[in-house]
Length: 256
Image (tube, rainbow, N blue to C red; front, side, top):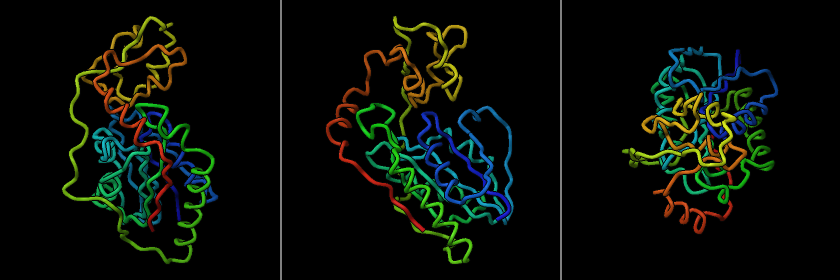
């Protein structure tokens, strides 16, 4: 391999940790591309036939987030080998891995491996708590080692099968609400720096452009003052479902 590139969209850092752990398994230098704040960028990425891309996204409602799909349109291959990685909140990843694989194929990548890993759910820290944990990251690193061996011995498949259905399930619907600051806010602006879409005002973090919010909850996760929440949360029933029905530990699924 000439170069190994890591690409990830990861507002709450779970996908970032997972993709970097897979890259670690190759035991060589990697080129790290954090695409979390790239929604307004015009930068294009072109990889060659002798490169490898490890591409990771979170799962939103069983799909690849629209914002990540748009960013990945600027990542181009040339029969380049790729590993597709999705990270979900211990509920289900449904069509997301198949969708990511197809996005990469459309961009002229040969997807030789894929993985569905678990991260702490964006909506509640009671589901997938503190994941990826040490065991998840060890599995990810060993996955990277395995794919490195397959490449070294030229024994990989050039088009793997992964779970999912096409047409894909409906994605996350448009919703007109966002996390807001409460009386605990001290204007530290951690939320501003965590927001991947620039929805939070830098000077006044209690001001939010709701239409820009993708409800990744990165601002809530980043706040150390319990100062951000969704008023009259319309997702309360979903959160209760997650906390009562999705707490049994799931393990990563690997495909190659």
